[in-house]
Length: 107
Image (tube, rainbow, N blue to C red):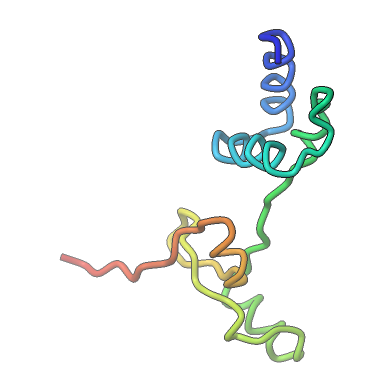
């Protein structure tokens, strides 16, 4: 891969709002899954990678549970940098390495 090609990939990642972790995940995904190594992957192979996770508030999860659409046991509280936890599927927590919510106590 040339430096110019790498610059194009990085600039497209920036333009598409990739965080550092998301960019690293995209590169690792291409390394692990690209089958045409007789030629370079195209920029879309990197940009199309998307590991976003749906997170729910307690109220949203409770509503979906009451409708019978989800089971509480399939979700776990995660820390997304807010005052309260959000809820994500346990599988997504494991696969994406999400930080689990820890109850913060006052000193």
